[in-house]
Image 1 (cartoon, helix red, strand yellow):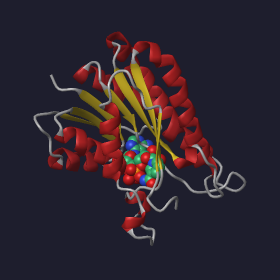
Image 2: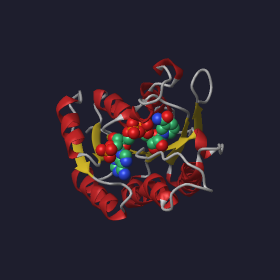
Image 3: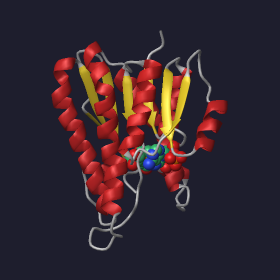
Image 4: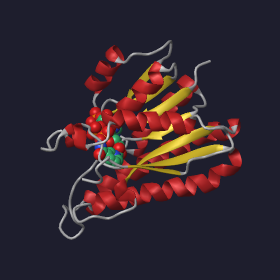
Length: 233
Ligand SMILES: NC(=O)c1ccc[n+]([C@@H]2O[C@H](COP(=O)([O-])OP(=O)(O)OC[C@H]3O[C@@H](n4cnc5c(N)ncnc54)[C@H](OP(=O)(O)O)[C@@H]3O)[C@@H](O)[C@H]2O)c1
């Protein structure tokens, strides 16, 4: 039976690259995004090796929708082997002058999404005593910067969630990895005037997930810090 991976926000960017990697290696995938059109496009174009793709429209900032996505996954797959809490949003700004509601939006999308999805899917993983959770953190999870504002707060919190889960889940042999990523070329950066070569490739993050997952059961990579070759942007 194929192994199962869940990836939030997988129609574009880093999530899409992870879906392409695992789909091409014969894993069954459950993915979500807000756009039905993009999910349909993914359904028709993703190259799968004898595996299944389950798509679901879900705004991960809404706990009710996250719960509906989790129920769909549990019905279709039962226990999953990997959860990638990837969906996230970046709103630049400063705590002192960003629009009211920015903190709430960023916390709901970047933190609560991972909290609720993990809580929903973990009971089956605990039963199996197997699995791996990857959280898409950021250099902004370890370093505040002038225009980071609430984004940085939400990504620090996601790293906090990763650490809490790591402590709770070690006795169940479930691994937790915080992917602390620097600037990676995706849609989020397409309007910048910088050359693509200045950024990391989303495919490299997908490869890192693949490699980290495939270490022996004796070892967990708790955090992995990936930066563009020439440093932060
Ligand atoms: N790119 C970077 O430089 C970078 C660096 C460090 C960390 N990260 C983190 O990596 C993750 C992915 O970033 P990315 O650059 O690959 O993003 P992206 O290219 O903008 O793609 C985001 C994906 O997530 C989905 N998504 C966004 N908001 C969603 C929501 N509320 N509910 C469900 N799906 C949602 C999008 O589809 P819909 O729009 O259809 O929903 C899309 O599939 C984020 O958590 C980001 O903070 C990115």
